[in-house]
Image (cartoon, rainbow, N blue to C red; front, side):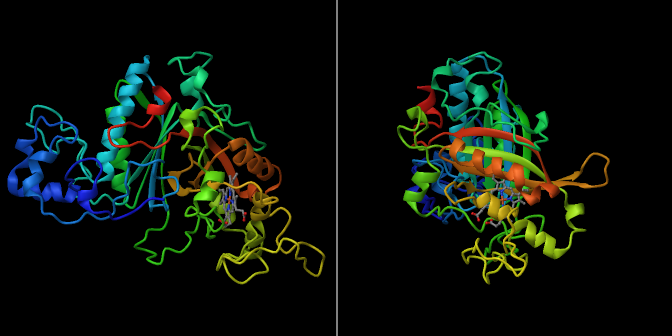
Length: 430
Ligand code: HEM
């Protein structure tokens, strides 16, 4: 599991680390801009060393580790998800991209800029600057590779074909799919999550900037949930239909369960992915105007839970076990046979780690309706045993289908983590 609020001096990336806030403070007294003009990634550290305030950074989630962060990390308040297409034509450029991304991501997750904040005036600053002075905000950056990185239109662009895992293939078409090209696919993905929307945007923006000439944005979607400020008790967040969403999920603190359900294990497929995980993302539009005209009982029957406290129908509290056999006077299941919760649960053998966020993208065309919904994201060890069968059941008989439409879809293999000095993707490329 990830750890928050570590001591500065324990940072794995340098002997001394500085948050963006400290950088700014230091710059104020010491004229940092002049000093660091040509420093590049992280080169400013030694210069500021003696002038740092020594205060402890908060809100840091370590970037380096056996697994990438942002998977079993407790969901932060905001996400910015981006899918990219690689434009580079040789493997060396691709490797360089991952090396540069690793360095930049490690810096940003510690609240540091990816290069100088202000330059000598003759060059654009390396860091775009909008996160200057902001705390790291628990930023995590998670990188993944899609099936098309291995073979695209029949072409093995980077000599990686032989390394493509059997599980890393385009998802099958599910009944009712209304997928749009503009929200689907991608050679690579970046998932940035943090407790601040500007920090997540800054992270993705700078990574895209670094990728210039090597990869371009294919589609992107920001997302949110209630903030910790709005709910200091951090109860289960509610989705845009007003229901608690995220109640039933495998326990991220249980290593055995994570190894069974989330982390790819040695022997599962090509070894380069051991310690990684498969990410499935679905951009699901929710017809909130229709939902808002639906009576409460119908809403509750749709999910199989009470809206108020999130308890399974027939039970009292959110985390009570559902009784799927319980029937009412008419002989019908109290948790209806087509309710989302019941159909998703199935016989309970398939599990996924759900880590989705709400999105709202203004208006849907000229319909006068919102384009709003769920950026559904889940992690798993083997999609063919987990997301795919669950979604096959849901697409066939989930009552929720009356109120939603799947508009975007992609699958990525999230690479294993790396150590300081290494880079994300090293197991795949070397
Ligand atoms: C807009 C679309 C969706 C909405 C609004 C939604 C909402 C919910 C809600 C409110 C619950 C009950 C509370 C909880 O346990 O979190 C739930 C449970 C669940 N959902 Fe969804 N969901 C959506 C799509 C999906 C999709 C696409 C999948 C996977 C293919 C999925 C899989 C699950 C699973 C596995 C559970 C837990 C079932 C159990 O109790 O064992 N959901 N969802």
